[in-house]
Length: 91
Image 1: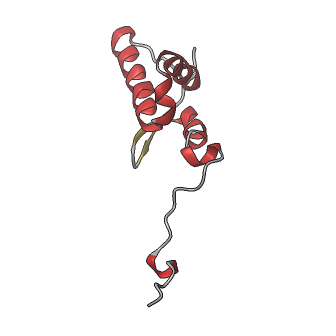
Image 2 (image 1 turned 90 degrees about the vertical axis):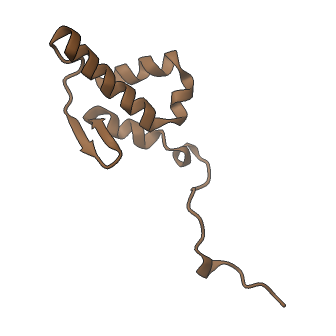
């Protein structure tokens, strides 16, 4: 039986732009599981699916989604500075 990470790798091979869209990749993996279950009656991968705030996430993809965050690749953090820390304009 395959793993959810294997399904994600296959989808990334087919469409490399999904690397920048972890939520979309997760949704496609979840839909692949649902489609395979509906057609064959057996699950595509054995991992449980967790209900997260952004939608269902296969248990094996939680770590993969963390690694796909744009700021984990060495880029700067997307956090913005609050107005309290902004420099005061000089008159």
